[in-house]
Image 1 (cartoon, rainbow, N blue to C red):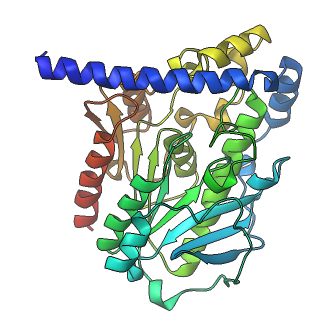
Image 2: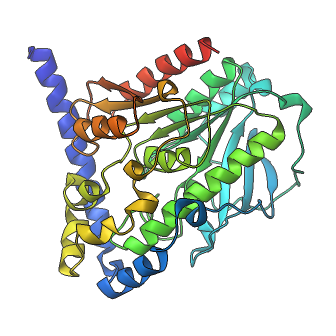
Length: 361
């Protein structure tokens, strides 16, 4: 290993370690919300007879609204899964149509999205679910962000780049993130905790919402849809792919081994201790795997148009786990960059793959 490679590896490992400490601290703060064994087993029994089609069944959108906030198109609708946190009960997505990409709109896309927060939620116009002549036939990319993603700035930069390529972009706020963060909690903190029942229902909520968004895109005229998912967003994307056909998909360091992510990952050390203290083991996770494990479903995407990107130094989404997943998915492509779980090289590589995929249309 060259000195520069050694230094790069240590930098990425240090970055991952810092993020793991932060996320474990958040888990510790939420320790009182740990699911009990009795509660979990009741939930698992309830889900045991369900298949993915039923578990992720998607109703039509309700209370659909389009807002314009500081030049951003914001779509919102009633979430198909309602819970105790009102902030999380409306699904939201930023919509970047290709036809409005110009220098002015690009500056707005890349500006800090400070105007879109929990205080500005009053709908100011209705949007009918009908084909939009302006965006008819324009393909759409859906970007699914990582867990507790600190900023959407990088994702909006990707949206601007895809607009230049003639693609619409949808950037949904996943449950408990960004505009959907409940008061008193960190961004995304409630999405994955030692409350395994809520974890399962949050995944369920996210998949249903993405499927609704895909239906909306098709009604608007997008015959081709791509998905770009990162980490937690990649996990959600993999579940969506087992139910929906897409033109292509890029999964960046997705969570694929649920047992490892829950009990063995450096990201979940506190969670693992809390669950073990309740008598909860990996056997409980296995009882829900038919619904929420990426390796228990085959993506409905052409294998050569499904690409998984791993990080050589990743200790959260291990390269060997991603390679195993690709093998299970039958010839989906695996690529690898030199970074940890947190870094930007994977996204740059993803854009190279996207350029290649859309150039072969």
